[in-house]
Image 1 (cartoon, rainbow, N blue to C red):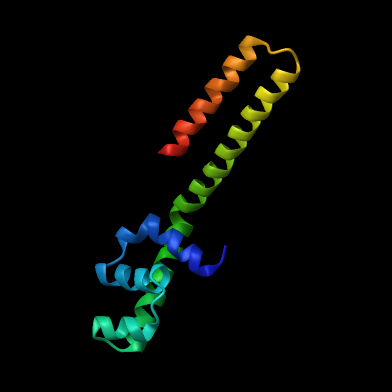
Image 2: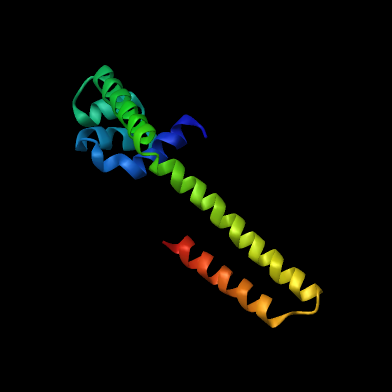
Length: 121
């Protein structure tokens, strides 16, 4: 994953653990695509001060992920959920081709419904 997307993703998970100033600067830089100079002007500090704050925040976000692994677990769960959904759809298709056993149809439908509810949360 490109660094800008990775930091933005980690910000969603751990942003509340940063200071308000750090979080806003990282959001400006990664989510709003502002330059260091633009952020410095908005915040009334030097460009170097903005860069240092962003680098510190990036380090904290990466360290939190290394220790807690919440974002990587979330990604894996999303991938596995997509696999479950795809397999349930394929099961329904195979059942349709094989004579449509009601019990298999019911289980596949329930699996899909459960997976869709999980995806919504």
